[in-house]
Length: 614
Ligand code: F6R
Image (tube, rainbow, N blue to C red; front, top):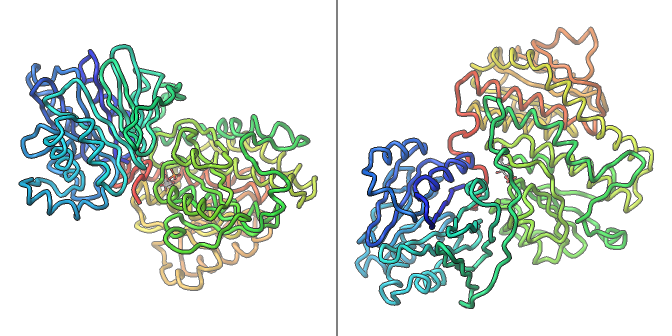
């Protein structure tokens, strides 16, 4: 979501902060700003739209105004108030002395505002953040100590925040605070960095301190002091950061999304390497702490996730139920919360999240934890808030995903879920060995099948071009590929803004069929297997209404070829593993349509890479 970068040291802060913000651009934002602070002087620059607009403004500034060695910057994803310059961060108190950038939402800002207004605070923006600026400024007026002012102010705030706060009168320090929003402090020699995510600072340092909820940090050029909720000085571990800067390069591809789609065969290999060595060996999941005894008591599984991760969870339902016979419910995290969900110590709750920071899923996991359920987290980020809540952890090892639209992380989630399902089946003994062996074999040969699809994308590109002017799209499938239809539709609408909907193919006749005519493309996923004939009949129904039919299939006979306007043939694959192959076709289709339409593929409008507000 929003990005924060702070710097204090000996170099030009403006360069480090702008570069850091550019490395957070992929997370999605709609305005940006920076404050450069020196003794009794602060220069604040803001711009709506892309970071280049801000850079342009700064490039016209006098050198003496931008040559400071301390400052804070922000990319804002609008929640309260339009994405305008006035709503962009940093925000200040009346006189501009206290300066703040903030991620998260101050939920009680409307309660706090009247009292501050009575004390003379004048609000310029519609943001919740400006309330925090005035509140901290008031505490500072009383205490004349910036650290104490922040410590005291955060006690009055409800909601989520990661802050960086500076004061003109003391440019030698940045105060950082965190609650339910990610924040790290990168450490260096005579300089320190603050960021909401690793890519912002990885170029400068490989060492960082993770700030935990309710902690406040005082960061100077040569020291970092962390205080807990009660104000005691504590020492957080300095950890090695996991990312290489090369992850942030497009490696010759036009967009990160295309690069990440093409990385998927290696992503599958990476997931499998330490989990499924060959079909004769049992699955190894180092951090999954579910013994046979514990599992024998588990009588239901709940999967909670959002967006693409939710679709991975839906595939998980089919696989886990088939292999373990334990009933699995899958629910959007935002629907799971704020009701009395039926979960107890015999429920296994699986949270799936690429970022591990999605606010809805964190709240859902906390709710399940209160019910004493065993929490298993499937995530790409071992340093995330969700990973820290886990009783069992399954890291998907997809590497950093820069494009806002999730592709390779979905693949890694699917493969991790297959591995988990086999692990559960092997531990509970609910499925015969030969079936599990067959599944492992299929997974081990998946990378070469993905390469076949990825090595020849000409047909998919042509189909993309042909349908790129469509206003609507329908995706249909049945059984284990129904989630593929949902995910294909989500990818298309996210990056091309074409209205796309995924339906269980059998549902077409119960309503959506009314929309079909010669302008409506219907993409059908047909895999050899139990529902093949049924989906074929649904395709006939669509064709009878003159819909333009695209088939994605691994099996088609001569007599049905003419039913389709266009066909994408994928390699032979079992029904159970087919979602991992079909989805690549749908990702490529969405990518090329978006590209033909000239959209901002990697940073689609209104979207953020990790959604840290509920
Ligand atoms: C879609 C996409 C989003 C995320 C969703 C959950 O391409 O990226 O739908 O899947 O916001 O995010 P995580 O997986 O980080 O919890």
